Image 1: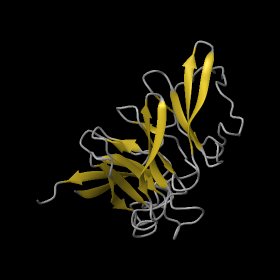
Image 2: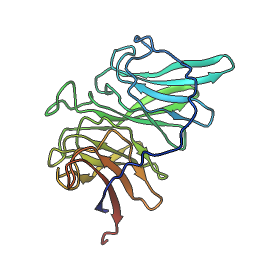
Image 3: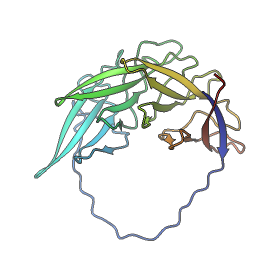
Length: 247
């Protein structure tokens, strides 16, 4: 499948009706120990009202966590679903996790993995999956970034489409060093294939993506943001359109 890139100009719509101030209630305060620390994360919620997110630090090995907050009649219960070791399993997960239709969680860890060179820190990072089996969660790495054309150092959440394909961005790596947009496709037997569906050239197409998730529409189009680059150097909104290829 070839990908055709379209770039759109971004405009900020800031005006909106005033709202009454609400009262903030802390439903959980991190202790900065095994429960996690530095929650630079988005949250997702499942059909039972459970919240899921990540912490970049803390956990059993000080390399970050995936956590759940479950509502109850008396408050919220915090549970660490996975503590990263910072080794082959990855470390420093930013921006949270994504739920698929089966209740599995997907996310990225910016360091760790199997490959260190040419990346910095302790590795090039990973894309991971957490699977729930009878209340017990297990972690699997579905892609180890190599620091080459597949990118490295992912710091954004991922998007899962209706077919179970996973999409994300890396801020660095790729053929030009400015990051990529990638697709991870499952084969049904537990193996995943990564494809760079766009390699940022650092010009009008943008630089390095952003920390936000991609959006996938019903036709398979993929949309996202770059915080820098573009015709004016101030970032772009981009679209990737799947195009038919000859058999």
